[in-house]
Image 1 (tube, helix red, strand yellow):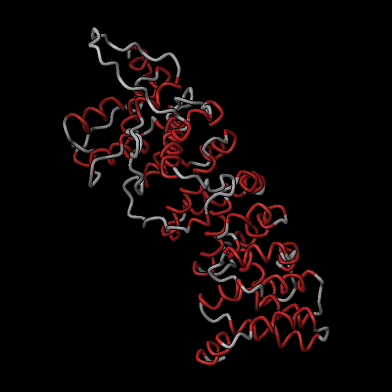
Image 2 (image 1 turned 60 degrees about the vertical axis):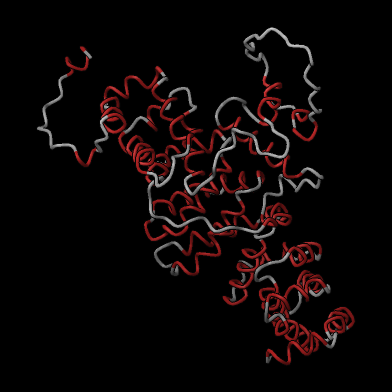
Length: 443
């Protein structure tokens, strides 16, 4: 239980002996002592990683799956809670292979509070590893975490500090399609919108918006989010004071897209960025519209230019999308269309998706949405993201938005803010006049 002694025990090579005792011993009291020793040895990130790499997690998970007595169950969940802090890949893999996910989900409804809360925190810690999140969802972890977060946010719930690991876990679960479907069906969209509407949760807003990007191509979820009022919240976030989204390790990346171990992985990443941009801006309906042969990794090198001079001619517009990469790709460099991804990137990506609807006027041609976009375009500390300007262009070029622009005085707002440089806060107070239907008819 002392840090110095703990380090000496690790250095002496005692961990394999303790792991062997977990499988050799049958006495509950002896097993509890070994489990407590392993929990005490997990006193630092380095020691937790060493324990996982030496195979200490899987026997604990197997013991938990064997439905032991209550005292041993408590010792096991406390040990697994310590070992899963800052959850490593080895820890998550062993816990899953040992059959521990199902028992942990069941223990999340245990009558004893200490067991119940430890199981829930273990499930939250496991969400940091993308490889285990689909299996966690299959075991019922999505519903358990949503239910617990909903309870803690209720009137009789606890403070924000206890909600933080659950918010992080729920947002990470949005990275896989199978878990997004479960989250949507279990009322997770309403819960995430509640977080965005709560000023006390402003520190989590960037993380929640980034999680909602996972629903970019889920038409049903986008319709539900729009009905819940997502667009004004996104527009308000463009110039908000919320903190940056916390960076996650590469092992937390979506397991829907396992890491491509190719020699030209950097160029592959640039291609994926370009593909995402083409889809988000409506040039492609989905990933299936872009052939895998279009990847820069598979593009043949360009033939040398002919030596003899040729008559200059204007290039004809390309009839298909599949010749575009030749003009956009430069060896060793990212595509010229790749744009910076700042704090406002997720919000702008969602707004861009909403603006591609046949009639986006009800959501985007409103005073809050237009003011948020214009405030960002004119007040960004650096050059604004070109996506914001494209959203405004898309709205003004859509005939379905004309009536909404007229009724909301959107044209005057655009002219005053972009041409005259006068923000609405600087406008003189106008005398209100009763609206007349005949005037609208004349307009």
